[in-house]
Amino acid sequence: MSPSLARIVVASVIAILLTLSLSSCWYVKQAGYFLSERARAQPVSKVRSDPTVSVSVQTFFNTVDQVRNFSTTSIGLSPTKNYTRFVTQEKKYVADVVSACAADSFERHYWSYPILGNLPYKGFYEKADAQKEAARLKKAGLDVIVRPVEAFSSLGYFTDPLYSFMTEYSEDVIAELIIHESAHATLFIKGADQFNEEFATFVGRKGTERYLEELYGPHSEQSALRQARSSDSEAFVVFLKETAIMLDELYRDTSLTTEEKLSKKSSIIMRRADTYHAEAATRFFSESYLAFDMAAINNAFIDMYRLYEEDLGLFEDWFNKIAAGSLPEFVVTLKELASGAKKGIKKAMAERLSAL
Image: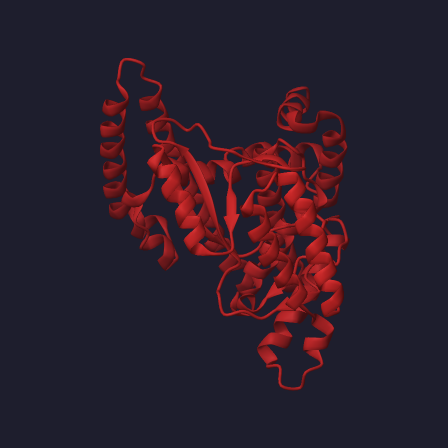
């Protein structure tokens, strides 16, 4: 993109966002960062031709090509121009995302966006802005988390780039990231945030597993390492779900005041942290899980995992019983169901499965 064309695109998009947002400076600021980042992105083909580019970066580009091809030919995800451009930056992630939840329940906090509708997160390119939003929500009495994100899908409206920090990722992490975000670009239902994230999570994980098996074999070192990481993730989610059940039971107790619920909530979290610390060595493989501070969690942290993983069993059932273990069939059948069910798709999935 030439500098003059980039300025035209930036000016046009900001004008549209200004109209949509009725003078919201958040849209203008984030749009500026977003489009500036994409204007700086270089075609991968150009970066590849640079003789000073390291072997590790060239290997990274080869992996990306393989994953992009696999995602379309072997999974059935929509072909796009995503991940064909490269952005060099010092920061090790793309943006900071704020999520929030009630302090005495798992009532999720939503932000409203033009076109996309309500979503349970808000992103910021500057960490200070994310922290300011988090402080505002905490002052309102909500549980809040701020987390870095390594990528996000613009749902086909723009070309999503690769970032220089991704060159440090292992092959399975690269594969899951690209397949996950490509799933969003293939199927996104307005108003169905839970489905959207669970669909992308399931396709990302299952697709990565199949990618490694096809490339290296099911009993390879790469597949074994991936399985160890997956086992850690699954064990961590199980622990959080068990904690959520305890907290949910507390929150539903109408005989307690809000203050009493919050006090008992703290006690439950501390007990769970003690249990986690005592059992971590037998539950987990990787250092990140072994060293995790379970005492620091809150409702927003737990709800983040519920958003991405609450009903993955439903998707596993659909994969096995409706799609007969075929990822392309899984994607096709859910796209067909989504065309009629819209945001009621998870209910429609459950009804279809119960009728078997």
